[in-house]
Length: 154
Image (cartoon, rainbow, N blue to C red; front, top):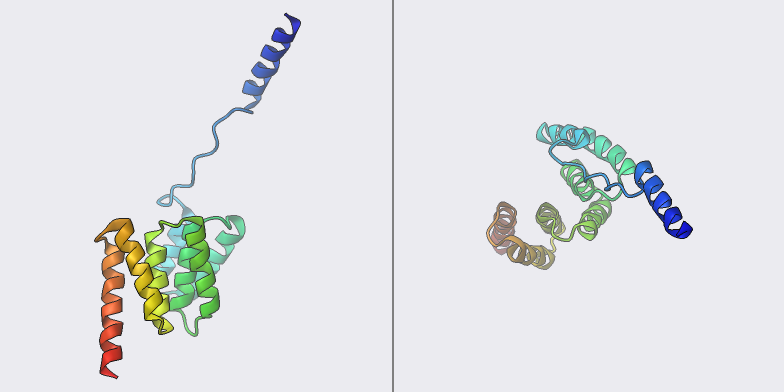
């Protein structure tokens, strides 16, 4: 009988102390101030500011796929992008969230920048499986068509 009372007491103390509390909900990307700031810098094509904001955000949340995705995007859009770093961050975004449609689109575009049409097509195929005909799929498809036309014209 004393053991049951002890178990109940331990359970009550655990509940009161929050040991069984639900985990914090994931950050809402629409209310994330760092993402808001980064997206504003991207919209203004202020690539350096976007990179700075996202670099700091990644230090605090290295497992945030959207931070990796937008950081790679801001690097890729800036002058003289370090493509090895761009690819590393897109791949990390996809490791964390394999269904991240934006990362698949942007990674496909990065492959086009390096002339790797086959890898860009691979990401297009992934997008077609993920979403059929979505905005990301349409944009990457258009970018691939443009790259193919330019390649044929050479």
